[in-house]
Amino acid sequence: MDPNAGKKKLMNRLGREDAIAALHAEDFTRRTTSFYRYVDIANPEEMRDALYEEWSEFGVFGRVYLAKEGINAQISVPEHNWDSFIKVLHSRKEFADMHQKIAIEDDGKSFFKLMLKTKDQIVADGLEYGEYDISNVGTHLDAKAWNEAMDEGAIVVDMRNHYESEIGHFKGAVCPQSDTFREELPEVLEDLKGKEDEKILLYCTGGIRCEKTSAYLKHHGFNDVNQLNGGIIDYARQLEKDDSIENKFIGKNFVFDERLGERISDDVIANCHQCGEPCDEHVNCKNKTCNLLFIQCGKCQEAHGGCCTPECLDFSQLPEEEQIKRRKGMKNDSRFHNHRKIDLSKGFK
Image (tube, rainbow, N blue to C red):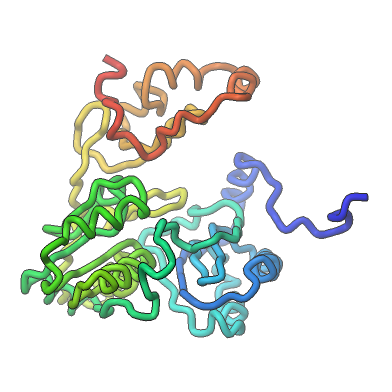
């Protein structure tokens, strides 16, 4: 007998296209938010199931990771359920008074289903036990204090992946060329060697990667480590509330949802990976087997069918049944996020 027989299936079984269609058919607005906390969660699996049931009742969509070390969430909540959701969230001692980082540009279409997963860590860093103490982190700075530290000549380090900083970053920031946070940590440590007594400023999207990085750097002897409180998202919110604060961030803030970015300044600092024209719009290759994330302008999207190479265009134009048949047993070519390793400007010439 199936041991799971009769149990409620705690997952969304709608396919991607059906889920997106249902999202666009909604007659209410949604609020996109993110939050994280390093906190002891005794039983992540049990917590995961409880949260899924609670949040499903509120119509929450998003991507949430739970581990024994805490929670990392990016979600959208129907506006009419917002207050009730926050009340229930805060009723759990682990998540009491959880700070919310509300999206800057939000059409409510950031997520189309709810996904909660348990993991070993809420941010994959590849660090061994004892390489950091999460209780010993850097000083948290608000937007004003951050700008002042920048003006005083502090070293600014972007703790995001290269494809994030490519479309937007703080002026003069050190932007590592790593594809993952796991790769970035040792790269940053090497870049900062000999600067242990200088003032270091760390920033990322919402703060979670800087929390670990600041603890990691302090463990390795850095004495003046600081981090942007609430990340780029909160920085932009503070600018909205106080127009006397100068915006030192140029371009767009990459976000890990359907939007793929929200504009912080009018500057376009990136270029289309195919024609080289100024552009900062990320897309995923329409060939689902490839799924490469790259920057493609509107003209190239139209000319190349949203694909990164002629091979992908040919594949994407096959009947869906044929695509599925060919994908069976085919390994993804691992190009996702790795556009630097392919010269897309030559593909369609």
